Amino acid sequence: MNPQLVYALAGAWICAIGLRGFMGEVDTFRRILGANLLGSGIFLVLVAVARRAPDGPPDPVPHAMVLTGIVVSVSGTALLLALLARLHEEHREEGEGNE
Amino acid sequence: MNAGTLMDLILPLGLVVLAEIILRQRRAAEAVAQFMVFGLLMAVAWVRVDAPDLALTEAAIGSGVTGALLLAALRRIGPHREPTRPLPSPARLPVYTATLLLGGALSWALIELWSDPVSLTAAVDARLAESGSSNPVAAVILNFRAYDTFLEIGVLLLSALAVYTLAGSRGRRSLEEPGPVFQFYLSRLAPLFAIVALYLVWIGSRRPGGAFPAGALLSGVGVLVLLGASPWPLGLHRKVVRYLLVAGFGVFLFAGLWGGRYGAMLTLPPEQAKAWKLLIELACMLSIGFSFTVLFACCAGWLGDESGEGT
Image (cartoon, rainbow over all chains, first blue to last red; front, side, top):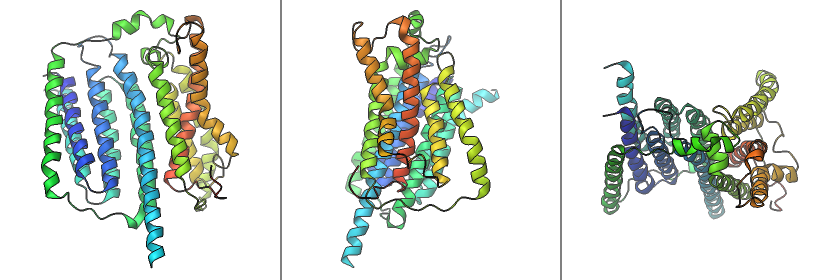
């Protein structure tokens, strides 16, 4: 089995674990971690797929997609975290109001 | 079996195991620390599959910036986090089924794919001369698939605006005064990092580099300057903040419309491609660096609207 396929398969199972975290966790913060793992798995699959041809340079198109994807993934994570933090602050204020 | 082959077995396996460990971690801060380790190991894996330039970006943005964001948000959420409780049992079966289906289907698809390798390398190389850069990845990002990159900068802008708006009306949180050693090194290193970022953009047309690693570097400088309790860069006038956030998207949009005169949107004539590419990359570098700084400051709760009049 060639080594690039091993990396791609690892990426596939990291995707699966990330999906489990995204859907199967109750804590929102952990869900965000799961979504990030899912993204990392997809990137690993793409990077490994770019190296499928045994000789010559790697395919630049999947590389460009990954480079684009990294920035989008961080933007999305930041937005989710900002929403989560704001939600906690609103809850805290409500809690203080009741006491 | 040599060391390289052994590593190509242990590293992928280790990544899968670590992903599982991260989600099983009881304390969130430990999970984040392990997530950052995961990102760095991921970068090593990318070096093993011949993507060293992507590995640099992943280490800087994917692991570094994401880790900083996660830790900053965690600190702000603080002790009021929801307790971790297990998923109710009726929901477990569909979740695990979906997980196994995804993993199995992807594995099967990948094994099938491998028997018939298709590569776009030849197609990219054939028209590389028209793109204005000799680095094929840069050519794809800024010319052949410029549309993706344009939308990506749009997503970044949208996210920065949304997070900026969500920052709340609590006002700026005061930071501790940093020590003199930190300030001494910061004042000397920050300009140096800025020069390195410019160099990365310049070299990006020929070698690995470009706006993304450069922007990541700038955002690192931005976060360090923030930690130095300096009012810059967030103390800048609101208008300047907005211009810096919009710069990448704006220049890209203008270049796209300019290209419209030569045919379709975002097509650049080969003789002008290099100049446009450099201009777009410089603007994107500024926007990426500044957006990540703003995202971090907002997630940490350091940036708020003091007057409460809205942004």
